[in-house]
Image 1 (tube, one colour):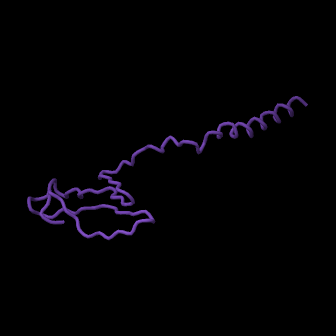
Image 2 (cartoon, rainbow, N blue to C red; image 1 turned 135 degrees about the vertical axis):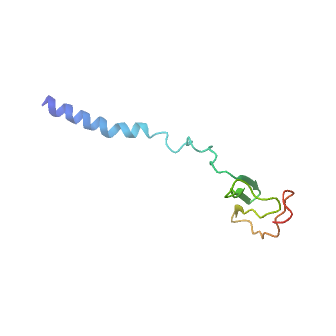
Length: 96
């Protein structure tokens, strides 16, 4: 009988232990404040987000002066904002 009781207590402990360790889950995740490891810049203004804005890495070390360089970005808005992209400007290039 004692062996059966020992196995029963072990199984009970094995069933109850996960319940006690999960009490804090979902409260404040350890990763909630982590910043994504993307190479571009992120800007948030009102309901508009510019995410991972970056110039593509050149295939051969650098882009030639006056040459073209691909610009990548993700542009999102929240569901309350309707926006239209009219232009892109920068002091670092003569045109975009």
